[in-house]
Image 1 (cartoon, rainbow, N blue to C red):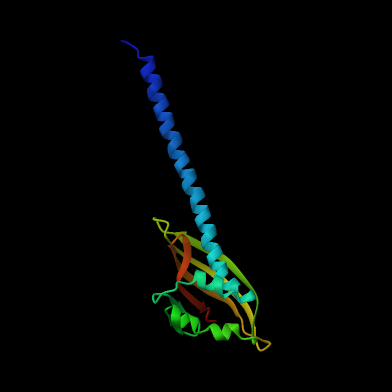
Image 2 (image 1 turned 90 degrees about the vertical axis):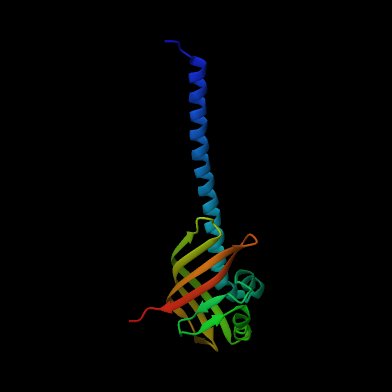
Length: 165
């Protein structure tokens, strides 16, 4: 039987390169996913954290600026569309409203297969005052959906609820 050491060496090298490229693509995908998850987390935090400094440009850069935006609040009210969402601006701008702090716990974020949609769940303490009196949401369940638009993670839907005792 004739041996082909050069051919065998070539085949082994090709298999090795294929193996390395597959593992490199997994590493790249994992690194990309970590960066996307960090960006999603930043948008989630910004959608609450804006209130401390009343940073409306930050808020409006995170919330979907269209008629498809949807928010369900613990009292059962539903905000449909960016225009309706923006009507709350006077309340937030009021000197009677003061954001104290927020705490997000148990944050779970998932990415779609195409990496252009994310959904999340967490528990939220949103500590605020209205006219010097507590006006906080404590142990609030918070879920939401974000869509990657023009390279930025934008919140398109949120739902807040309180646990019934």
